[in-house]
Image 1 (cartoon, rainbow, N blue to C red):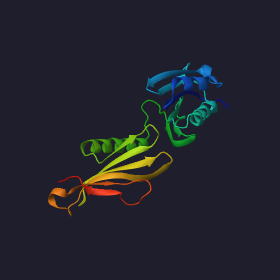
Image 2 (image 1 turned 180 degrees about the vertical axis):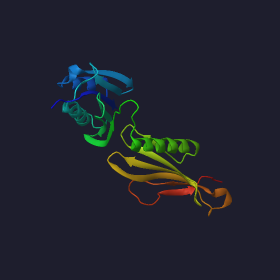
Image 3 (image 1 turned 135 degrees about the vertical axis):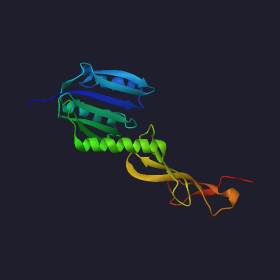
Image 4 (image 1 turned 90 degrees about the horizontal axis):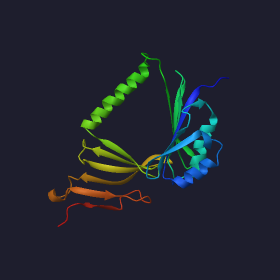
Length: 210
C-alpha cells in the first residue's frame, strides 16, 4: 500500500530546552526533526525536509513526549499533502489524548456544503459573541481551563468562573459575582466563592462594606 506524503508538526509547552533536546536525541526520529523556540518553555517541532511518507512513528513520538513530560500540553498535527486525504490534530496531556480533530483538503473551487454551513455558523456566532460577549475560555499552562460566563437574562445577573480540568470535562464553579435584588439597595453586588471539597459556597457576602 502506497502511503501519502505528510508533514508533521508538534507544539509543546512547559518544558526546558535541555530536557526536550535530550529526549529527542534518544529517539530514532531525531535526525528528521528541527526545533524552534516560540516562547518561554514553548517549542515548535517540524520535519527538516518538510514532508515524508506517512508513518505511525510520528504519532507515537507525540505520545512518548507526553509520557516523558506529563505536565506539558502537546499538540500534534499530521497534514496530508494530497487532496481528499484526512488531516489530523491531536492534543496530549499526561500521556493521554485530550482531543482529536480531523479535516481534509479539497480541490481548487470545490467546497463541502456541510463544512460551509459549519463555517458560516462559527463566523456568525463569533461576530455575535464579539458584539455581545457571553462567555470566554482561558487555557492554563497545566492544561486546565477557566471558563467565564456572563448571565444577564435573570433576576440575578452576574459573572461566573468555572474550572474545567484537563481530565474531567465537568465544570466546577470557582466563584461568581452577582446582583442580588433581595439585599439592601447599597448591598446588592455580592461575591460567592467555592472550594473543591464543598458543594455550597464557602463565602458569600456583599462586595460593599460600611
